[in-house]
Picture 1 (cartoon, helix red, strand yellow):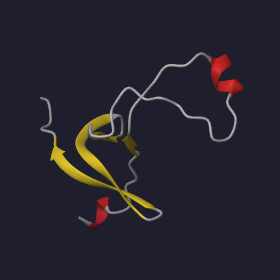
Picture 2 (cartoon, rainbow, N blue to C red; picture 1 turned 180 degrees about the vertical axis):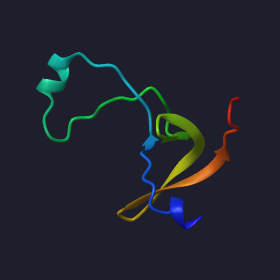
Picture 3 (tube, one colour; picture 1 turned 120 degrees about the vertical axis):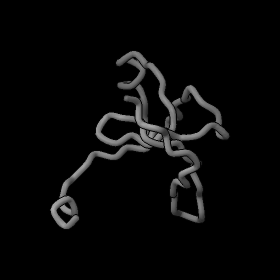
Length: 77
């Protein structure tokens, strides 16, 4: 197992998505709100090396955010 301990993977937590024209992005200033295509209660996605592997719920405690894994997805064959 020690051979894989140093292998790096790209891990992303996806809260939601949206599409915006570049002109809207360039017009944004600090504090701008970007609407996403999901609600607060929908699960976030855990993406590893471009593959969705799990879903989870975002937790906020004071100034820290974390993700509680609620569902590990089965691998498609």
